[in-house]
Image (cartoon, rainbow, N blue to C red; front, side, top):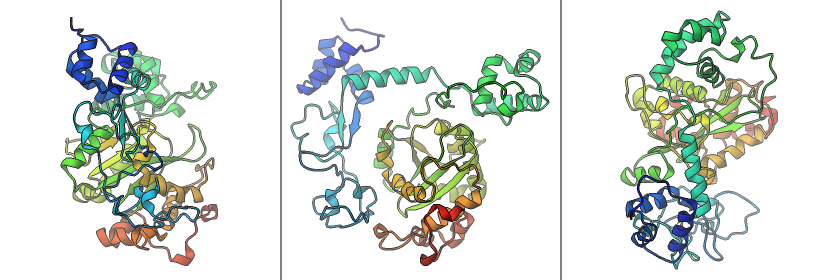
Length: 432
């Protein structure tokens, strides 16, 4: 008898993994477990993981031209012992000729490489179903769907308009909830949670007793949209690119200096085709600070130019990026851009921006506080970073490639100017 409306157990996942290793079909697995074939198919697709591992004696490389490539020294790493860059697991991320190749077998059942005979020799990205990882992933999805803040942007603005003026008048959250019960319809505990997550113009500094209490152990960042990854996963990202191959991808990330909730952080935006990078300083690592930066960019560039730059954005799973709809659309519902997320703990999926972070780390090493820096300091640093010559760009600078595409006035509008080669300084002394 077919099981219905019950979650898949860990024992069933172990059976799925073993059956896939034995090259059993999804239909046969479904029959063994008394489940529908669609249920098993969804389980395998949803909870399989992607691994960027090479074959026996070879490194990972999923470039379409890897067998005929003769490029050398793309990453300019003097310690690299590879004759050609096609044998390096880092160079293909920054090569301008890179074209991704995927195994066509992953597009049809069983959608994974578990029982594939060529798996040990294959250098392409592999999809693997592992029972332990699948069970953990399913639990995290279930847990995250019940956490976070279930608020729409319009409702958040309404609450902000009521609560912030009263907090500025030194009224306590309990008093506000009691006197404005009919308007707020939330508890004082929920209000404290919203204030701590920096969702309002008011903050913990407007609460009298909050700052006198000893801070508790830091909790993970609050996700604004519970289901922010729905339809925006890394697999959805590649599905979109296959349908729209001319789409320019922009990568986005956060760079921290000294750890701490009171420390400033950077939002970095990277254009892989030109290696051009922007950075913006933020007072806190929150979703609100990211939204404010994009609102400023929208006002600065206008709809047409913004769409030209930010057609599609790829980022990670940090809570600061958990309000994608506020970035993707405006108050009228107009679509400005699209956001997709990498797989968890898979920073290599946006390796181009990670390579750019190495230059920033020369100026701001890990553990260095950024609280004394202003946006003018960060813009100066990015002028030096974007004026640094790259071999992968044909011995040109990111500034030159970017301005050839969009013009010098656009770069200046974004606060970036060209630094002469002899004046480039990529040391901490630059900001001192």
